[in-house]
Image 1 (tube, one colour):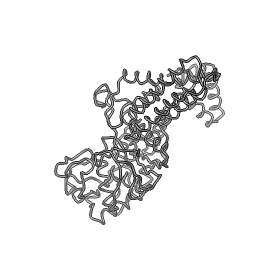
Image 2: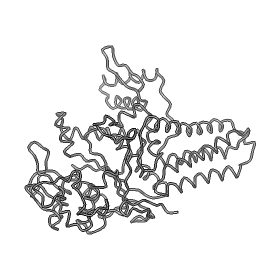
Image 3: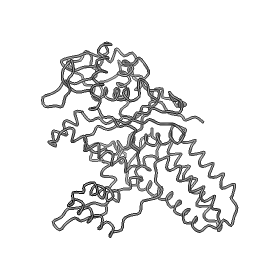
Image 4: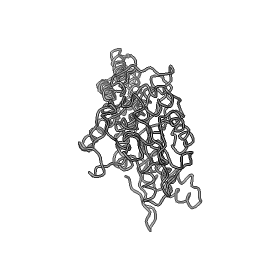
Length: 466
């Protein structure tokens, strides 16, 4: 069976056929780095990391790119409020982003391009759009002529006449048409800016991804992905810019994940239910959060609540306990019975159901059901007085293989003993006195992985488990 992807562009499941056989070019819109990522941001991180893992598992060579928007109105505002340089602020939150996604079991992309690293290419891209009459200069700003692009609205399935001015597409007197959107914004006093032939300024949000995609992959990519909120206007505008520039199709498959709600309400700062990943993973096992996110099909909305997360933790513990029991039995099994063909078929059937589920638009909810089928069968086999080592190993290795595809770790790291923590803290203090900062940072990371919180007091450093 071929892998099927629900393509947001056609609103249909389609057999996946890459541009180049055996290779996948995949771009996922990354964060605007002015704060820690919130729990809504964690969903595309986990979802598309899993898509990448599965495509790799099925034999594809995946070139996975996810960007950082490191110049933006929100970034400039945050930097001004904190009295911090824009580059220092963005570097700090890029590092924090990597810490958070690593905790969630997500692999880094093959490339994490930054907007500020592509300014020359952005300017050149805009120049081409101006030359082709798809863009115009107005008092130092540059706008895209939305109505000139005949297929505008194809992704969000709206006609141009019915479209309302969306987020970041602001009506203004500088525009020829309210639907025109900014490719370049004229510099304001004191703002970070770059020099162009039409005046100093910085790029608009949408042009950045078009250019980074083109710079890394060329005119057409296989998969472009992101959150549902990016479909319009961001992804719609990416298509308009990119296809006007190249006269070629921009992306063959568009994937969009659903929202995360908090206790059945949309997450927002005004409601006081805004949850940062940086905070929540101090309270719950990040692997539980990943398991929770994957327990629902990526296109469906998901409700975050304490009860549902606790249920996800219990479910993950069941799988972990199964592997622990298999490991325990393997240390004592004597192979008094032959390999049971029926047991081996049960394992093969569970694996086949897992693959069938993932082939069907990456249905992780059904894939997890396959894992529980496997776990239930393994636990039943473990009740037998005598077991076969080959069968036990087949259950164990298959569980580990398939959970690895989902980025789920079944073997938990052992906690450091209190005496070991004290010794590490003492060593870190000495390393800092010796100006051995690499060792000091290494110990800090070890303690962070163990969820050890350090507190500086007059009496010295105290610690506690988070």
